[in-house]
Length: 350
Image 1: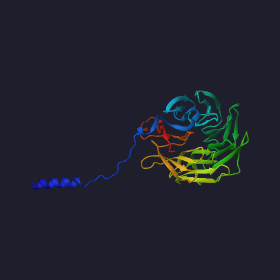
Image 2: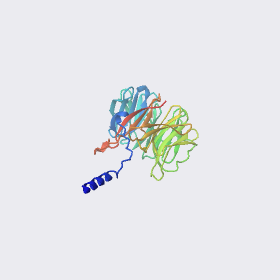
Image 3: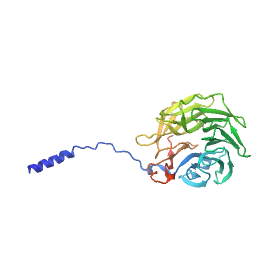
Image 4: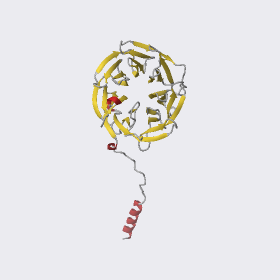
């Protein structure tokens, strides 16, 4: 009996040696988010409020998707285009989408209502990177490898080589000024109706060679916002950068503690939404900043990891749309299943 008592005592003592005081990890059910499951790799997205639609460049499946946003998110159309669509832009009247392809030297025009191809153009550029409507009849197009950009006349099909460095584009349409975020600094070019000429105002270099993820111009404030990261990771970039468009001086940094992937700006320029690269302890948050104070105003939890150019704001500024990569989506050996993204809608704080 004595031995049995000792054994019981030892068992009881051993049971009290371990205490599980670790806080449980927090997981969110995806049903708590408004998600349209797409499971595709996207390279660009644009919004058209008068069409109640978002257009997505499906890079791996060589197509452009039209998503109806009027009530529930629905796939309205899926149009096959060229090889690896890399960039989209929409005309001022929202009737036409221009598509640049990384996998072939062609530009396609797509009717936004019917999603039918209305025209196509062969160009000299390879490995295209970005494009933007200069006006309703002219596109400017950049490449990842060619030494300079080109403009394309959509009436005549004529191509003109421009003395513009390659990079990511944003345009001040009222003043006909093109801003190009290159690997080392921001450049400004003025349009004379035929050619772009570099503006005498030059921005300070970033201080490193970078990868450009997204660049946006806000007309109300006249400010350019740039999301970028250090190319060789020797310097940890922790800011959203901004510059004044008139004289190219530095307008300020927005501290996000990791490189920015995408940004969206309210029409009045007061609200800045940034998608960071890194996650917080409980998830990846979109950060809303005040343009006036450069400080955080709100946080919005996303359903997964984010991507470059993967954020847009509707004109009513009621909703934010994100491309999100939900953990567990990439468990297939299929080559085109890596980093597949879904579309998330977030209702914004007023």
